[in-house]
Structure formats: structure tokens, C-alpha cells
Image 1: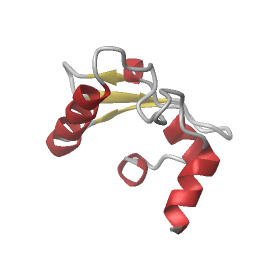
Image 2 (image 1 turned 180 degrees about the vertical axis):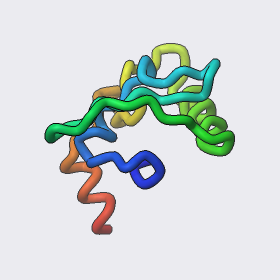
Image 3 (image 1 turned 135 degrees about the vertical axis):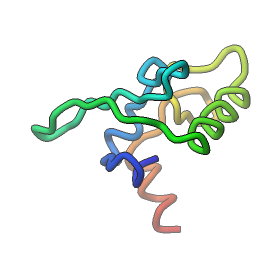
Image 4 (image 1 turned 180 degrees about the horizontal axis):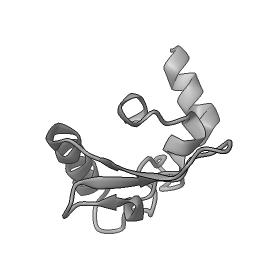
Length: 85
């Protein structure tokens, strides 16, 4: 997702389910560092993966896309640690 939409780490961890429109397969992105907000298309494979992620989080899902085991949002530090492993 970060690569496809050109997201910074902080922009990725801030993604919420409310930012994704499943009916039109679009994602709303608020940019950091003077970037312009945009609405981008989500391709079929990515949309299927997002729906699968949504199912795995269950009925009591958190508002964020990427959450820890405790249902709190991931931090940029946790993403960077995973990247360098």
C-alpha cells in the first residue's frame, strides 16, 4: 500500500477504514509535509486484501487499518523495525 500510493510511514499508520470507499474502490489520502490531499483508485487485488484484513480484525475492529495485537494503531517506529528485519 505504501508503494502503490506513495505513502510515508506516518501516512500509512494513520490510514483509517473511513478513508476507504469500498463501493467505488477509492482511498482518500491526506498528505503530510505540504502535500495535497488526494483520492486514488484501489485496484482489485489490493481491495481483496483490504477486505480480507477487515474480516480478520473481526466485528470489534479498530478504526485504523493497521493495528497491533492490542487493537491500537501501529507506530511509525514499529513499521521501521519490521522493515529492517
